[in-house]
Amino acid sequence: MGTYSIWVLEYGYTSEFPKAITVHGAFGESIRFSYAYVLIKGNGHVAMVDVGYDNTAYGKVLNDRFGIENWHSPRDVLSACDVAPEDVSHVFVTHAHFDHFGGSEHFPNAVFYLQERELSKWIWAMALDRKFRWLTAAIDANDIMRAVNLAREGRLVCVDGAREDVLPGIDLFPAHDTHTAGCQYVLVRNDGRPESSDGWILAGDLVYRFENLVGSDENDPSYLPIGLATGSQTNLLLATDEMLTRVGGDPRRIIPVHEARLKDAFPSRRTAAGLHIVEVTLGAGQTSLVA
Image 1 (cartoon, rainbow, N blue to C red):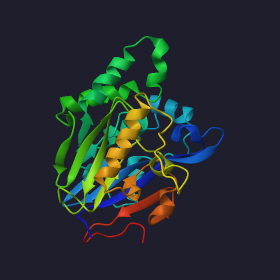
Image 2: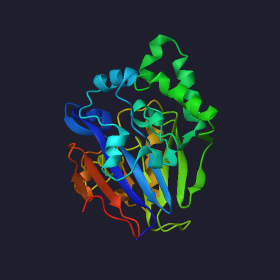
Image 3: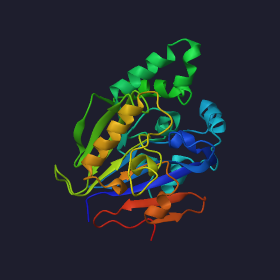
């Protein structure tokens, strides 16, 4: 068994979501779309990848715009894992869309890691003429101000490119100009080795569905980009290839947190709140949350 346990924690969902947003060109279909973040425990650390959002103020406006149902707060969701938000020491933010970064104030003891380009480019985009507002449709400007406040408190690390061993065996890699200007993904090398044979990638929104990694024809695999990118679809495909290379070409080791079918691909359980906990891998000496 590896060092870290990794769980994907659903905190809400959309019952009818346009598939074309998740797989480029898949028009006319609707799917269930999970909203989730990742809990990582091991080696004496409690970390998260992304933190969801608050269903208040402009967060609620966005919640209603995207039709999100059954939202629950981080405290409620983490309580099903015997974790409190105060226990979290590190948060790796894949990008600053509201559903990934808007819940930062729930984690008073955490240090947040965000690509510097992600922060600076959202400020640039918000300063453009109103005609460019599509670019910022999933951004809560208050979250950008929260990032500034985190910096004032000494709890924001602006990463410039790749950074290895942020925690032992956990690396950050940029995927710039893809889904957003400063996306990053998280690699957990669960055996601690530089060339890991037990690597897991938490992909943020670089991948929405399994099809993004393998295509729709199992006899002729291909990369299919997500349908929502403020950057380049070509860069998305190149990032997909890079991620697969880092996990030995095994698409099962790249985790798309919005994928509702994760619960069928890994051990999982449905909580009393009607949300799913997916156990990607269980670290040595740790207790399963789905058994």
